[in-house]
Amino acid sequence: MSTFSASQSTNRWQQQAVLTEHRGVNMRLTHYPPHHRHSQHSHRYAQISFLLSGCFQETGDSRKIDIVGNAVGFKPANYEHADVFGPDGCLILSINIQPDAMNSLGINTAPQHWRCNQAWNPAILINLLSCGNLLKRFAHLFAGNQKNAYGFDRHSSPPPDWLKHCRQVMDQHQKPVEVSQLAELTGIHRVVISRMFRRYYGISPTEYRQRRRVAHAVNDCINSNTSFVQIAANSGFSDQAHFCREIRRFVGMTPASMRKLMAV
Image 1 (tube, rainbow, N blue to C red):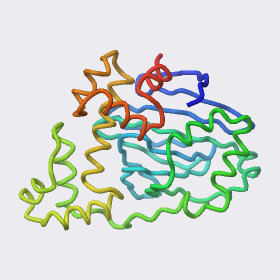
Image 2: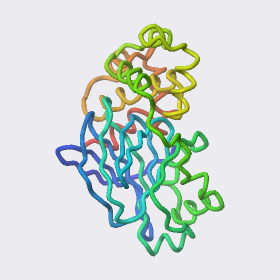
Image 3: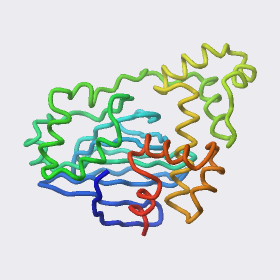
Image 4: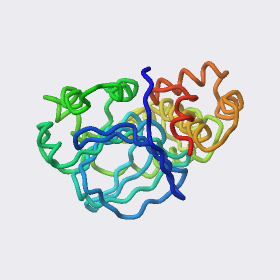
């Protein structure tokens, strides 16, 4: 991956690196701590966000959306919303676009949307940093694909109580909870649990466990000086090599690069 420079900032509840800025568009990498609540707020710019690790719940327009998995979202400028971040924190790559740049990109202003999108790759997004013209590359990435990029296609009704309980059980235990254990706990067949979990959260229970493990490791990488060997063991990876592969697969960079980038 190409090297790049970044400016870092921090406050009592988040760490952020501004990765690049070009003609009304900037790209930021932000880490939010576990269980943090960000009260209602808005941004003066439009924002496209890519969830790299963790999960969170966003409230806006009198509805709550659980953001889980390989999710991409769009918020227009001045959209009022509030966020509650998950038990392992959250790492989000955001592309922030001033109004003039929105017109240059040919992206029509649209309401807030989130969707689970397995097509994008975080490494591709991070590598946009090495582009000489971020605006052109960004426009090429999304041109002709606005519906797929912004369309929210999750189930519109809230998940049933028993499914929310399954997720709570998974969140409350550091060790992996198998679907068979959830089936025994709830009396719901494991196939039904897996199908409904994907229907409402966009990923399978196994994928959710994997993403929680990665988010736990990302939080430790950014907020401690613990060795990667120890983080790998604490987060449930088989060894350091496995840990490094998974971080790069989900986040688009190595643990060392991420720690250096977010260091304050």
